[in-house]
Structures are given as C-alpha cells and as structure tokens.
Length: 104
Image 1 (spheres, rainbow, N blue to C red):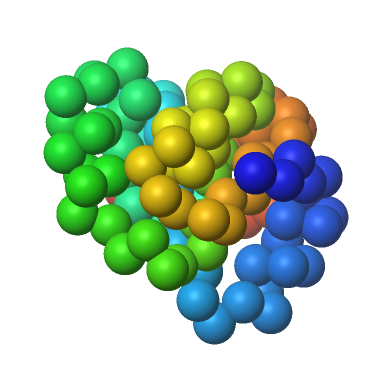
Image 2: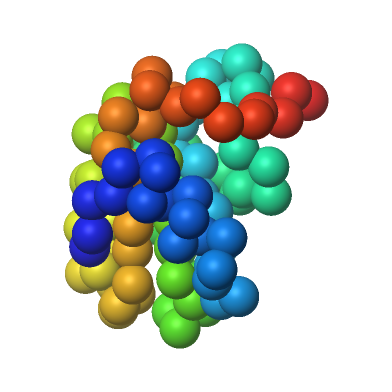
C-alpha cells in the first residue's frame, strides 16, 4: 500500500493503463459526488465488500478513496491481505479533493 497526495494519486492514475478506482464510502456519501469511472464498494457493508473483493482482478492497480483517507487506508490493507499487490490510498480523501466529481 502506498499513501499518495492528491497530486501524486491523480498523476500516477493518469499514466496507469492497469488502474481501477474504488470508492469505499457509503451510498449516501457517494450521492454527494464521486470520482469518474470509480466502482463502489462500501467498506461499512463487510459481507458485500468482501464478496466484491473476491471478484476483482488481483493483477490490477487499485486507487482507493473515502471521505478522509482512513477507511481507504483500511481497505488498502484488506485488499493487500486478499492478494492484491498494488493499492494506492488517497491521503485526505474527498475532504481535500479539488478535482472533478460526477453526480448521479
């Protein structure tokens, strides 16, 4: 797991053809806006979270974010324990995000 600032997270993500963006916030938080092309895996729904994790390609690079960076850090650790090698935690999460958001 690597903790990356928004600048590094975005720069590395833009160069990564093997990237998957994961939003681990709640559905209510996600409704306030999310990073484009992200998949949703609510870490507060552990059974669904683990089931989704089992179906992911372990060879991909996962860029994970939440509201503040805490849950995404936990998610990175769980991903690593499940055999995913490359996880990148967004330091500060959405609280410090100043990039574009998608609203559904």
